[in-house]
Length: 291
Length: 121
Ligand SMILES: C[S@@+](CC[C@H](N)C(=O)[O-])C[C@H]1O[C@@H](n2cnc3c(N)ncnc32)[C@H](O)[C@@H]1O
Image (cartoon, rainbow over all chains, first blue to last red; front, side, top):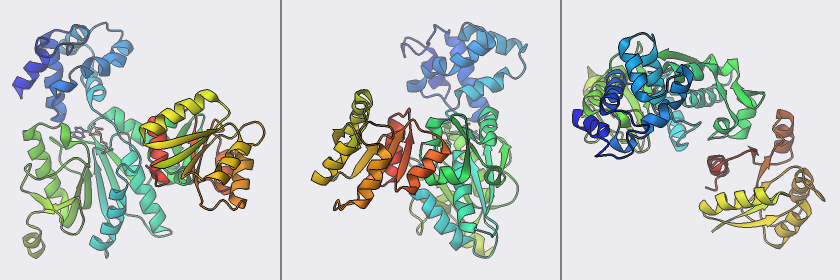
């Protein structure tokens, strides 16, 4: 881990990685801060993004260089600066109904695994809220007058969560993955932005929480989505997250990862589901059900 | 190869849309107004039509109504693509039989996403 940070921090190894000419020490501090707070490692191929990602924050704080930013961080004079840096560095890319077929499978699976109780679903690493809102729309439409499954959504980034809670999306965001009929049904236009109706947002409980270091939300879940989050985590952090997800998942429940992600070779707590393609279940499902 | 007819009176928009659609493996044809588009559809209906609203000769809305009443053998998907971004316009378009709606300005992700939604990308 340290090696990769040193590699990032060494402009000779990755020319251009230092962006605005930040020192090796500065880049190491930023990489370590990110890993300590989120478990995420900056791949050396993405190191140049530090500079791009932090530019708006530098402008906002009227700081000229990454070196000065890190000086300010380390002298402790700017409370909350560490959080702002994390907010700027995490990849919060998301869209509505991302990998659409996954949502059909979730609807189908939930009816099968929670036939006699109100389902509980956790969107872990919900970013700016498109994932939980997509689930909420789907659940509310299917529930009709009945009560839809309970939905909990968490993310480590306070900034991402604030946006998720606001339910407000610009024209480009609202058009990514969201069918126009659903947009008409569930969003109000507000200038050129679109805001989720309160009847939709109230179906989601948002919480700030770090998957690596914080306990999972209380109670067990029928389905946990942790999509496009683990990808960025260091191996040790990943292991902790898998353990926490395994404990939070009800026996017989399902884990959903991102399209390019797998548990194979990553953990022995989960195995591919035989019934739901691309989904995962506890390795010891049978024993846990009996126990 | 999937086919798309881009109907817009702006040459620039047609060019941008064509470029995006070609990177998405569509074969693209163009029309400058609803009348030309209707002729094109009668000659050879595309899989999908990207349709502007305000155009001279025949508007996108008049074209859509004419298309849905015509006996064009297949039923091309129609995606409105317009600066008319108010809810009332969107509703009117959907009620008139549009399948999807793109609010301008758009980018590649917008077009790709909407084409996926209508089952074509
Ligand atoms: C690329 S987004 C994925 C959003 C959504 N799940 C999706 O697939 O569209 C990754 C999110 O994971 C969050 N994240 C990263 N590390 C985390 C951690 N240790 N605990 C909780 N969330 C984390 C980031 O803040 C970011 O919002």
